[in-house]
Every structure is written in structure tokens, then in C-alpha cells.
Length: 386
Image (tube, rainbow, N blue to C red; front, side, top):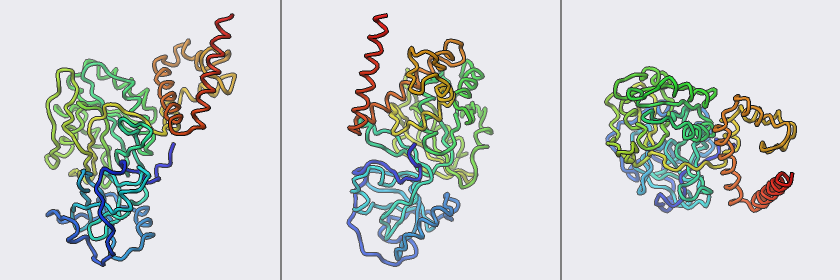
């Protein structure tokens, strides 16, 4: 798994840049940033802490102040500072960095000079996915989160494979995942879905909730700690914005809309946004994830499918492919009903995706992938001859 402290962000080019300006010495952002009427918030209440304080102290620039990114739009950033909310542009050297993991994203702590973002402080955690349409290019959905609410709807059939993929994304971030199963008021088998989710999440927590009736809301609120940041991840129509509005108790008003006849959402959330909840927690709502490509997630896949990794370690051969090799503990577990065959298939699919992604990026990995396929073809031919 990639080090979650590595700075990462939305791919370059999505935010217009401004030329660098000479440093001035205001104590707070002034005319260069468009200020709202927000009176400001103590930084600690926005999630500021010693790691960020130390990182900011290592960048002694006259007139610089820290702020937290609350929203990224195509034209500018919305940044929260101790002096209030402002709109800021991104300095040229940051916006044009060739690494797509360097631009600021929602949840980031940034350095501001004259209302211009000049640097991004190292992240504690980061939710990174493969870019839509370009999975070999990473995209950060949110940064510096403490918990990941993986939101899945219980309307219709419970989709375990979708939850698995989202949980890998959550584990990879370095934050603690919580499976939030919404629309419990219309579910046919809530207990069965909770039990299935508990098997998938391992050390994480599972909560079934209804944003309409209020069932399970107390359990969800128990995870919301003052000054801590929670992000909502899930597909369209899962009820993320409705859940956020319920948690906000009137202080949050995110757009929601009707679902199509197939139960899928209409993407009423169009941008990631950080908001403050009445109890002091911070929440990031995100647009629905349609196609979710994982990025550099080998370690996270191993963490999310820990029981398969343990079984694989017990195989007779260290390079067992779990197909027809003698002494394969994985195949024996499937035959005995200890390991669910569909879960193992999902594990293999995710591993295969990561190998293909690595092959697209690294020529050496591409050569290794060809060698693996040739070895598999040879094994298949030998078995057919028997």
C-alpha cells in the first residue's frame, strides 16, 4: 500500500493557476481571496493538529497562513481559515506539477499567501482511486479523513461484491472503515445483510440505518467525534446526501433527488464538499462512484481479504496459483465450505486488475505478466494431456 502520508490530489489541469506573487505580510488572507461572511473557526476545530503544525512550521514564508480545502471547483478552491471562508486560486508551480498527486483536494491542509494556495501539507490519510477512463492515473477523492463511511443501499439485492471493492478503497486510505447500510426501513432482510457485511469488513464496524425513519442514526452518530473528519463513499442512489442532511440536523442542506426506476441515483451531488456538523465533526460528501478502479492497492486487497492471505500462506507451494496444484489450502477451504467461492473469485478479480494496471505503467511488470500467462498456458496444456 502506498504511504498515506504522501501528498496526493486531483489530477493537474482541473484548477486554473495564477502566477506566483511576491510574498506580503498579512496575518490573514486578504483581498487576493474572495471572502465570505463566515467569521472564521479555530483551526483545531477544523482538524488541525501537531503533524500539520510541524509541517507548516517547516515552510517559514512571510505572510503565509494555513487553511483547509472545503471544496474544489473548476474555477477555484473554497478554503476554511481561522479568519473565515475564502475563495482561492492555485499557484502556477503547484497547478502545473507533472505529478497528478500534488494538486490540492477536499480535506487538504494548504499554505496560503495573499489568498493564493502555494503548497499542500503532507497528508495523514488519502483516498486514492484510479482516474475515470484512465485507471493508471491516480485521483484523490478526499484527504486527511479519520473514518470512511462506506455507504451501500439495502434496497433490492445486497451487493456484496460492490461493498468489497469499496472496503478495499477504504482500507487503503489508512482511515478506519464503517459500513453504513442505508434504507433499512425498506430492506427485506436487514439482519442477513448486516451479517454478510460483517464477514466482509473484518475489524471494521457495520451499521444499518434509515435516514427517513431514524433507525440506526444514534449508532452512526456515535462514530462522529468533534474535530474528526468522516467521508461518505458509495454509488449513486445509496443515500449519502440524505444521510448527511440527517446528520446535519438542519445545519447541512445538500441537494438530493429522486431515483430512476432502476434504483440508481441521478448524481445530485456534483462536487466533493466538506461541511461542519452540529456536534463538531467534519463530513465530506462525495458524488456517486459508478466505475471504481483501484490504484496501487495490492496491500489493501490483502488487508481486506485477510483470511485468503492466511490460507494462501498454508499452501504446500509458496508460488501456488490456487488452481490445480496439490496441497492448495485455498481450494481445500472452498471445497470444505470454509471459504466462499464468490469471495475468492472477487479477490482474484481485484488482484488481476492490479496486475494489468501495473503492466500498463511499468514495462518490467508487463514482461512479468506475459511470463505468468505463458506459465499458465503451459500448465493448462500439461493437464489436458493427462
